[in-house]
Image (cartoon, rainbow, N blue to C red; front, top):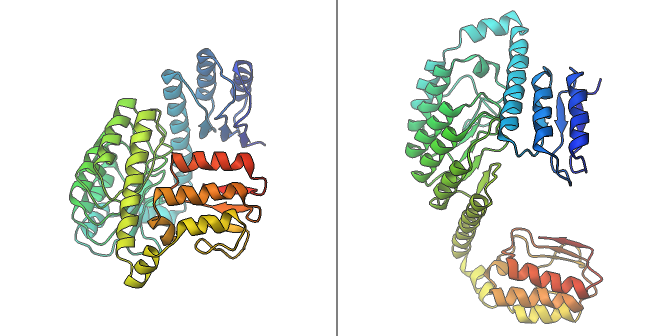
Length: 381
């Protein structure tokens, strides 16, 4: 009966993994098993045992687990992809005659021509005419690789569609590489979602090449790929992102801490630059009020439990600098003074500083504040 078992963030070691593997071998109904983020280590040998068990299972389509053995990871990814393909094929075979006939008649090359010439597309429609969604689309699943490639390639000359959703949509390395070529020529697409597909090293490198030649993409989603890619290609992706000035969000599962830090740094740099541009274009009235802001005075009011002025909210006991233009214009010294003032404050119990230029120095100051302040119950950074 059980189809989903979530045991993440526990203390399962070698013996526990081997016990679960034995159970998996005797079971054919479990569809999802989550074992990631265990607090203790388990052996690579038991990882191989788990992989062998998963290979015998025909219903399991998702398994989250942190593995060191690349051989075990590849075997598990292969088995899960095999199971998903089999289930997808069974679903398509059981579709009604009406749906089947429409699928047979699908003209994907005609669809590609419509996309390339900015005409209204037919198959992967969504609520928005500027969004193309092949996620959960039976017609797309029935298309051939050649037809899918033709559709993706057509976006090179499209100037009306700005958002692409191809989640769990049979995107392989060849399609990802084609998206890389599209990004070199297309300056309309701002969001590309390729999560939960089968993009490996070659596909990631192809996308990285496209990113280097593109300056309009703002959001790229690559998380939850069913296959592994090399750490070397993660570095290539990080180098590409470092050259991009518009990208503000990238979801991807990385093993290289160096690549993760480089990507996070580039995305933060881009967000800060965009924020600064927005502030520079604010009206003169807002600008003049920002110039006149007295943050040291604000800090004194906080320290002495007086009513604060700038980061007000619906509650007098909550301090919110999130999305506050005045806070964004403050200097690092002024922000530190404000945070430090909470050491002696006894009226404010909740702090909201989301996406508010909080750096290591400010976080360290919050650490010092928490040693003395026994009023704050919620801190959102």
